[in-house]
Length: 324
View 1 (cartoon, rainbow, N blue to C red):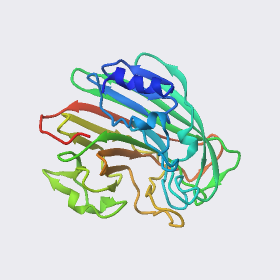
View 2: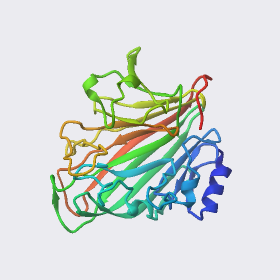
View 3: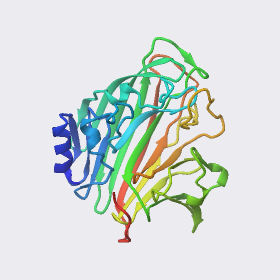
């Protein structure tokens, strides 16, 4: 898919967008698509694109949301008593995210800042009025592309809230086509620093030449959490000749990494399984490279949490990989 194909989807769905960079190397931000952006590298969209989701935000029964793909900012944790995806008792993306309208605050050829008001409700029914902001910069190089992002969530509620009442950290999820032959690598660390967030997936990971290799071959649904000791994660799709490295900056000393697990209430979040990166693999043929920021000990009006990260897109060999 190229720039023109992607813009046609936005236009048919009558959704606003903004281009940062250019049609060869840049990102298209969906201002009415949760603020998701889709990266263009050497003229092609490299993120997964779910075309149906552009015009139909929910499935045919009006229940499960259709996820458009791209690269998005969500609040974390997902589940447990303090998450944001079980406020009705069943998993769902908060409607305030699906229906939000981002505004373009500032822009230049290779930069943009977009912002939206998002009212969150956690799984205990506590309301958190917030401002979501994404500051995006693209840096085309001779043979690779860097996209630098600072995602920020500001609490604007009148009530002061304390640890135990809430957890809130920025969570960025980049979706990519994946299948047999595809994998993620990251630096070798203790086995205790890598753990499952769904069913066991030990058979999908091994250490090769000093690096963890995690197969994202679409044969099993799984998600792993990765501890703060790991500096970066990198996705390889040999069939597309694509390599994607995500590196998040460390959080401030006043913040803490958190448990992002997709578990319904009344489960309590763990104070030990604290996630900096995550890898999700889906049997429908896509995967996610994810990074998570930190949560503060308390929030008053104006308290903000942020996550700065760099995603680098480059080319690899010509081995084949299933494409869907």
